[in-house]
Structures are given as C-alpha cells and as structure tokens.
Length: 474
Image 1 (cartoon, rainbow, N blue to C red):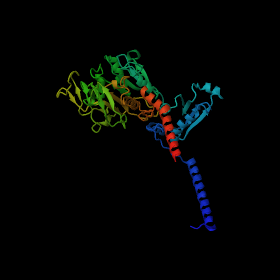
Image 2: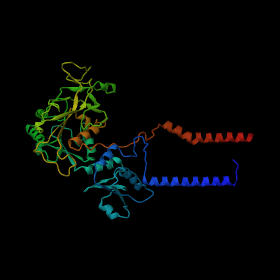
Image 3: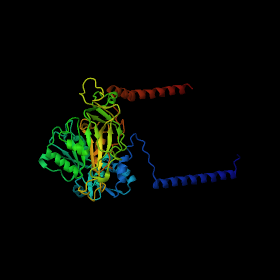
Image 4: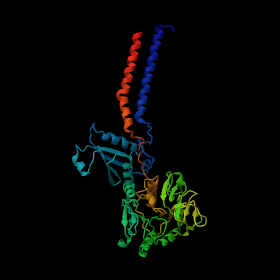
C-alpha cells in the first residue's frame, strides 16, 4: 500500500476510533465491575465460600442481623480486613447483615461495657438475643447464628443412677466430647436422678436413656411412662442384653430387641478384626438421615424390630396411640445377630441366629396427645409437632472413644435435632484445606537446604560462565 497524505489520515482516524472504543470498553467493564461481581473459589474444600449448611441457615433467618466488631484500626494487624472478608461471605446470601466497627482504643467505656476480651471479638445480635464470638471462623459464626435462631436453649436430660453414660464424663464410654460439641449449638445436657427428683422437668426437650447397667425401679418406670404419655420426646440407647426393667417401655413403643450381637463380615474386609463391629451405609427415609452420606460404625449393636403395623396399614383413628416407625439405620444383608459367644470362628447358625439386614435404629413418631403442653408462640418448631422417639441398639457410637469415627458425631447431632423438633439445624463442617502443612524428615530438609544454598547458585554461576565463554569465542 502506497503511503500518502490520505492514507496517513485514514490510519490516524482508525487509531483514534480504536483508542476511543478501547477506552469505552474499559470504562464499561469498570462500571459493570462496580454493579456486579463474579467470584470463584478454587480451593480444595471451598474454604473461601460459605458451606451449604451455612447458606441454608441464613435462608431460615427472616429478621436482620447486626454485627459489631471490636477491632483496632491499624495496618500492622489486619483484623478488620479479616472480619470484613469473612462477614462479606454471609452478606452475599443475606444482604440485611449489618457490620459496624468499634475501636477499643478510642471507645474504652463501650468496650468494657460489652466485656470484650480479645481484639476482633464480634457481638452478633438477632431479634432480642445477643452472643459474642471470639474465633473468626465460619463454624463459630454459623453455630452462633443457629443458637440465636433457636427459640431458646434446649435441655437434653440424661437419666442417671443406674450406671448410664454420663453426658459430662471424660471416660471412654461417656459422652463428654459429644455434649461439648452440642453445647456450642444451643443444646444443653442436664443429668437427672429420678430417685432424688421424683419428676421430669417440664422444659425437657429430649429425655435420654443411655445404656443403663442396673434395673430401674417401678416408680421410675412409671415416671418415664407418664412422660411418654404426655407427649415427651425420648432417645433410648440400648446395649445387647437385659432391658433392666424397661420391658413395659418396649411394649409401649411396640418394639422388640433381637437377641444377640450383630456380626458384620464386611468389617473384615476393612481391617476391623473385632466381629462385633457393624457398619451402616444404608439409611432410611427420615429427616435424621436425609442426604446423609457418611458411613457410621456401631460396636456391639443389637437389632430392633417394630411390632406395630406399617404406616399404610396403621389405624390413624386414634393418632395419640398409633406409632409410625422408620428404620433409619440398616446393616448389610450378609450380617446377622449372633446369639452365641463371639469366640473362635463366628459363623451364622440357621435357626438360632437372625439373618440380616437388621435395623440398628428406629425413628418413631405419632400425633402429640391433647394433654401435652402447647408449643411456645416464639418457637421455631412446628406449632403442632409430632411426638418423636428414637431407639438405637447401641450407645457406644457416641462415646468419647468412637465419636470421631466416620459420621458418628453428625448422626448423633441429627438425631437430637430431630427429636427436639429442630430438624432444620444440621452440623456445620469446618472448612480445612488438605495438606496445608509440609511434613518432611530431617534428611529431606537437609537436602533442600543444600539445594537452595549451594546447588542453585552453582548452577546459575556455571551457566553464566558457559555463556560468557561462548560469546568470547565469537
């Protein structure tokens, strides 16, 4: 192309048009970035975005949330920035979350009035309730929001006096670790000795019978029966063997415990040598196990059979007396209930043993009796909740020893939430990226040190000398 005055003018005009269009596009992109945002979390566990459980909880909170952060305004400690980044994840799903900052150095009186103890402490308010958060993690904040959303603190009452598992105990067979976890979510464990108290408190959300070792007295059984007849919710954790005087309770619930201990040969394939361990990967259709994807482990479990009619056959003319049952925990078909001692070679014996699949857990519900206390108007639960009972053929799975195995802890939390008519609350997992720490042996650290101190510098020096020599020869 011949360059002349006309073509030069055309090129200049083209360049000006291109520059104008380019600047216009940049301006539009800048404007769009202010009005719309797109985020993508590429971390292994999505730790920079809220978990699905947190999002569901926010969807159940109709009222606005106010958060006051007591954090110093300094560039040396990025506390305020960390608070803003964490709370912004919540504001994306709930825009009516308000975040305000107070500098403890400039407003000491207000800081003392709120009993602030650490820099970055949050005061979260919802409705007329307020709680403090001292740990800047999603789990801590979401658990706090869950407690604020509850109508009040739920009392989980554990019966004592017969060798039951203690809710505050630190022994291997007790539930201390599990109940500490639940305390952070608004579920408070209370011990009750019926011989001393002679009554079950009216504010009991769930009554727990946790693996008694001695027989209950007739008066205690009567109190339990009256509690059940008045619409109380019950969690019964039974171990293989004697019912310890609770035969009438089993008759009331229309259940029967299968004699013997469940044997699951599948555990041998997973390296578990004890034949009394049962694995559960099959879960029934119930809110307790809905979308539950973890395996749970039950040591020395007993099978349970429901003797009442199935739901299609049940007579609902008297809803106060008719139990509806769901098998929520089912063993594999190859399992069986071994009636003999678990010694030597353990094999299924037709006639004396009961072949699987067996139910380790049953969830029972029925309409609440008309005599039961009405639900408080400020409760988040259904205004006319069903009476709920869960019977499990094992109590070890929530003990301090086995709580951390697979999904045992989450399963126990779901059971108590369902029993206390808070089945919408679910466990909030901690978002932790795998392999965040590099663990090497001393020999490996020494090799890496020599590589960076001497290996790489020598390599660069050698390459520089070679390049210099080649250029000199030219």
